[in-house]
Image 1 (cartoon, helix red, strand yellow):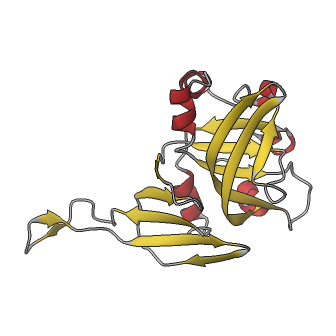
Image 2 (cartoon, one colour):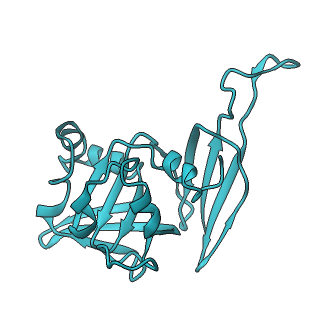
Image 3 (spheres, one colour):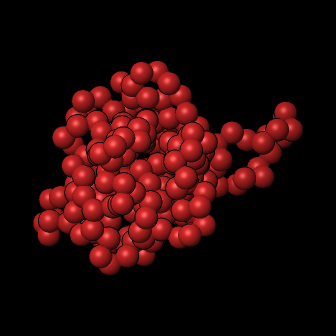
Length: 200
């Protein structure tokens, strides 16, 4: 069982517990990936800190400043995708982000693993298409490409990606281009606003 726990700071970041003189803890919700089922608890947070517990019990803190976007890969077939090297952090990416994450050093890979991810096939033109919200568990640089292992958490209707194109910093043709990029966007906040995550 894989759990995604988001711990919110609450709407009043500087709210104080009058009795103890401490900041008030924000609400929490958890998402559990169990086969095809997903259980979600309620939260009412704006700013969130994410902690991810993978199926193997490993825990990771998560950055909300960026997200991975992998387009052109079936997120439901296996627990990994093989990305061509020439399509990995080479396009639809800002130069400063490429400089920070694109060296493939051990340090850069650890940073990438702390970012949420959206994984999807290229757009097929139907309203039934689904992407997934996921986290990257491991990255292996191979001769034939970059193998990206991930943990799925829940599906995202592809219509949500299209409806939130500007908020997710997606370019018009990214939907039909196989690639892996990183965006300087708080994807959890966008998905909360879109009603995919509970929270607002």
